[in-house]
Length: 597
Image 1: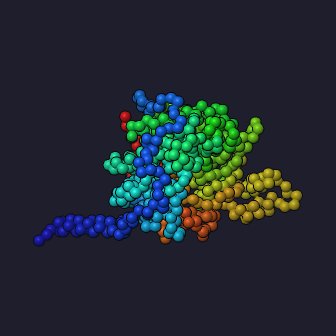
Image 2: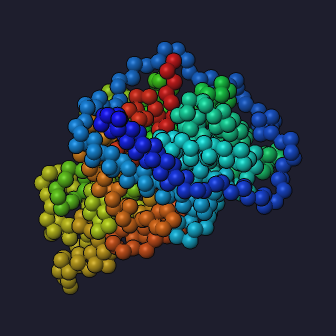
Image 3: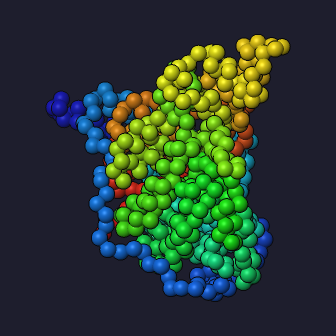
């Protein structure tokens, strides 16, 4: 007879095997990759064309700038040392983790069944959309998410599909150098780093694409043709010029990916290309219209940083600043340039951009706005953009790297400002952009409806006139017309675009401080998004966060699976998964390994 203990062991083994088989069936759902779509037209380039051997039309005026060497800096530990969790804490965390993973699986299945090898799935109609080179943006952007979520078979299927992606040409006549770099190059390098080089095609494809993008730097002053780059003209040897109107984020946010490509490939040309950009930004930092920061746009052809008067950490400038502390990390502190650029710009942002908003809960929070230089003064715009919500995480990371512990409080206030914007709307999601009422001190920031009403009327009319209507009547009309949540002055763009910046900062605050209340805030945010944005196919943009029954837009950009869900997953994962002392995440949340020597 079989003993009870042996029978129990055999039963457990049988259950485990059964669950594993069921999991595999559910994981793959009987799906097999369809054949790649046929090319829409013959390639405009000859069969033997190579970007790597394409001669420069504008030879470099100096030798290549090498990666910095020498001893690394003594960078303090970044991530909190977490204590062992209780069984109850583990159960709650793992339950939340599973919910996030299920949302990713739902999105990934919708993509692979409806838009395989295309850039994006249309989450309402089930079609697809190509706007990022037509190279399968969601596939490449999601590679590292698949690995991180331990979906290894799906990862290998996606890696196998890379052979169908030709990075020497594109069905799009023009591409964005910035978007291609952060999504594709970052995604490929991250997957290569995470898998410890097991899949050589990842680095091969990253290098293939890097060689293509390198041709955009072939201009008279070595500044890349950002914005809309006509790659075919470059391939045919036409002379190129850097744009006279370039966005700061587009031209200033290529450093992590090109640096890591040089580190892994051994070819210094990629680092040389971005270092020339950093040198130009450093030289101009104190001579802009807001010394210490750079405007939203610049003349890259003349390297003129003075024609634009608007300064922000938000749209069109954001990742320029984000990459300063991260580049310092990736180079292990061997180059102090980005540290100095970060510290100068942060000091100016604290003075001119960060403001405390009036709010019903009297929370001590901050929001990052924008400023326009007018004559000898600066006109502040007390706005909040979802895109600026990365700032809290950036400040927290910088506080640890550069040993400025007082900045942790600033980071907390900024991150809580974005959490507040989520919590104030009926749907529980933050709008793309809004305006708030600024206040100056504890007394001025003490909430009363009268203070809110005065702020609303001043924000709209610039003057308070009660000769025909009372202050309350005027304010109530503004509130009703704008359908304003408490504390808001204006909803400029009511959409939730599936963006990651708020959860990004919540993730950094949790991993850096160890405070578990950030997990609860993250869970509340996730539940709101999951309940309003989910479709039968994937997830879609919510048109109006003020409406609990809002219509959706047939769009799901690749950052939803490549970035937003990854941050939600990592805040509920074991904290050593993508430890901040070993990895640097690019602006698309692609982890790049910090070199250990």
